[in-house]
Image (cartoon, rainbow, N blue to C red; front, side):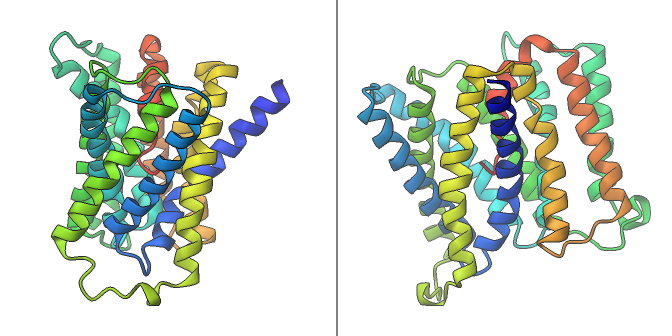
Length: 309
């Protein structure tokens, strides 16, 4: 069993860490919001068909409303903005900024009525974490960066973190299906509707010719649907049932490192010293916060399903 757990865990590290690069490749010739809509529509249909086939109950009308709210906060606000931002921001930088989602979760949890107030250790972790973000995206004169990051891309990624945290916080009190994969499939399906509406509203499909989609982008999209969403999440659910949650939660720390390495070797992305420094600070801050807030580790592991999944 231990061997199977480690194989599944390593697969999870690689799969979910690689989806940032997968998004980068897919949106080379496919509009970002539209690509996400297609990805999550197909993934959602597959998951719901599978769960219906094994006898799990489908969402009630009230649960469909809840999954629509959460799905659009997570997948439209979260993943959709990440996809849009990766037109201008390297996938490795996107992964590192998204790794700060637990920092936003701590803040929203403190603001939520009846929520858990952060300890002084958590506050220290928040400060350290946001220092890491500033080093990553701050002015070149301060961060020491050799290149300037797109301002709107950075804002979109930070907004994605906030919206993902909002969706996760709302899910704590929402009426959701008992089976986690039914919930996930429903969220994907409802989120895909929101993504398609935004795609049409922003006009990103105007002038786009499907015939001009490259085989490289098509492979990236298929990879995100099958490996990123289905295999990745399937491995995650299996690990939750068969491995210590503290071990499973480590994916949130490892995935950004995998994304940075893959972005460098496969995506020709710059790997400056400040990126490694920011990586150590952000991930260290998240680990510190979780270590001082152990009762929340399982919940955060389930909620911080890195926006890219």
